[in-house]
Structures are given as C-alpha cells and as structure tokens.
Amino acid sequence: MRVIVTGANGFVGRQLVQRLLDIGEVRGQPIDALLVLDQALDGLPEDARLRRHHGSITDAALLRRVLADGVDVVFHLVSVPGGAAEAHYQLGYQVNLQASLELLDQLRNAQCPPVLVYASSVAVYGGQLPARMDEGQPPAPQLSYAAHKRMVEIALQDLARRGEVDGRALRLPGIVARPREPNGLRSAFMSDLLHAYAAGEAYTCPVSPEASAWWMSARCCVDNLLRAAELDDPGSQRVWQLPVLQLTIAQVLTGLAASFGEANRERIAFDPDPQLETLFGRYPPLRTSFARALGFCHDGSVTGLLRNTLNVSPRHGNRAATGKGILA
Image (cartoon, rainbow, N blue to C red; front, top):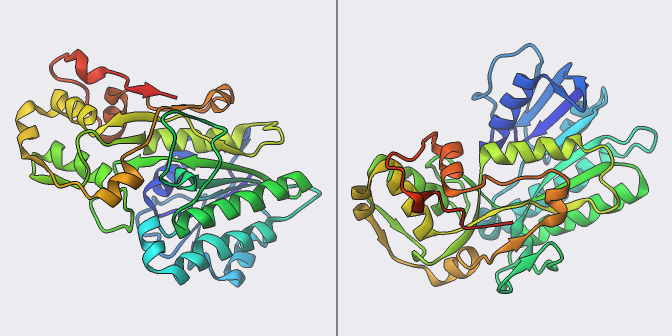
C-alpha cells in the first residue's frame, strides 16, 4: 500500500503522518511506503517507510515524480489558509485551486481509481447562515479560499462520478489547538484562546463571549480523515459535512476554568471585531445525521475537546464544564 500526504508538515498533517505510522495500515493493507510532500519536512519522525518529497504542490513536475510509481491512497491537506489566501489572491489561486486540480488530473485512473481524501472547509457556506442548519445547506462562499475549496469539491465529485478518482471531501471546522504562530488563519483566535488560558497569560479575544463556533480537535480530525479513507462504498455523494461541536466562547471558558482554574479567566479580555465575528462567531446548531451514519464523529463535549487538544481533564468535577453544547 502506497499512501501520500500533502501538507505533511502542517498542524494536522504531522498528526496524520504519525497516526499512519503507528497503525501501519490503511484499508486493511499494510503501508509499504508513506510519501510525504511539503516545502519543509523537518518535524516528521524518522521511519524507513517515509519517502520525503520537498517542494511546492504547485510544481506539476514534482507531482509527476511523486506519483510515478503509483499510489493507492492520497490525503490532500495542503492549502493556503483563508486570511492569507484573501490577502494574496494569486498564491491562494495557485495552491488551493490550480495545484489541487492538477493533482486530481494526474491521479485519474479508470482501471484502479486511487482513494483521495480532500480537506475542504466549512468556509464554503459563507457567513450568512440560518438559525439552524443541516447537511443540505447550499454553499455560498464569501472568501476566495472558500470559493476555491468549493471548486475542487465539484471537480472531485465529477471524477468520482466518472470512476477515475475515488474522491471523498470533508468540510472541516475550526481545528484546535494550533501552535501559537502566524498561520494566516482568521480563526486562529480559537486556538490562541486555549493556549493563553492554559498558560495563565493575558489574552484579548477578538470575538465576544456570546460568539459561537464549530470546534474539533486535531485528534478527532485525523480520526475522520482515516474514516473517510476506510469507507468501502461511500455512494454517489462524495462531499460530507462532518459532525461538529457547537460552542460559545463562554462555554469554552467555563470548560477551561474547570481544568486550569477560575483565576485565569480574569486574564481574558474582549475586543470584538464585528467582521471577524460575523464570519467566525455566528455558527448555528448543525445536524449531520448522514455523516454520523457513515461513522464520522465529533469530540463530544467541552471536556472531550480539551482532553484531545490540551490533554487535560476537569479538576473540580464542575458539571457546567462538561456540558455538551449542541452536537451534530
């Protein structure tokens, strides 16, 4: 079994690579070679199964070399994040759209279609969401990043229809807790808040306590990526909205207080950015019965989210901290 991970040195990519090495198999077959592609690969473990390919996903010749010996499963994670893609349109266009379409084209194989798991985004829905949502909500991108994600979803669905690429696209929510470093993500405040509270540091949150978002840990995200690859017969619909944990900032703070103490809450201030809150702080309850039936999952509760992101559990047995919010 030959497996490729693009964006392998990213936040989710590193955890996915480690999990693949740990479990040693995909779709019931042992992993003989795990090909990893990114511009830097210094953070990955040493393992004889790893095949490192340094370079940009936009290099079509590099892609041909990586794919030259064939591939069975591809996890396509690499992208320019939303804020960076909006500020640098050409870069986002080349990485998020052109390179993804080139990858799909090079993967086409009607005799033995490779499985492709694509990391799409909830950004495809835009910012004008109804009071309650389900998986039938039509996309309405309001950022270039989201528009490009939607275009790739359509191309993937079409190649799956043609039987040339066994594509599966997952619309990912905010994945936490990312390292505290510049990353071009406008939703980075979700991770920054968790890190600051856990460290007892002062932090000014750019959305209000009432702001609601869709949350998922990287560990849970990897679970879902692997589940997508394992499905034997996904059916005709190949773009899925994952189950999410819908929580307000206030609910997350209550969960953090149960693990790190109430005193740290005093170090959290608020200076809401109206535009940011419109885009990332007005997410409604979301029902995802179809995705749940396929075996996709969420973190389950604030406690589960913090356990999976910060490796903590409540100190005080505070029932309010373990409240589940609204689950899909």
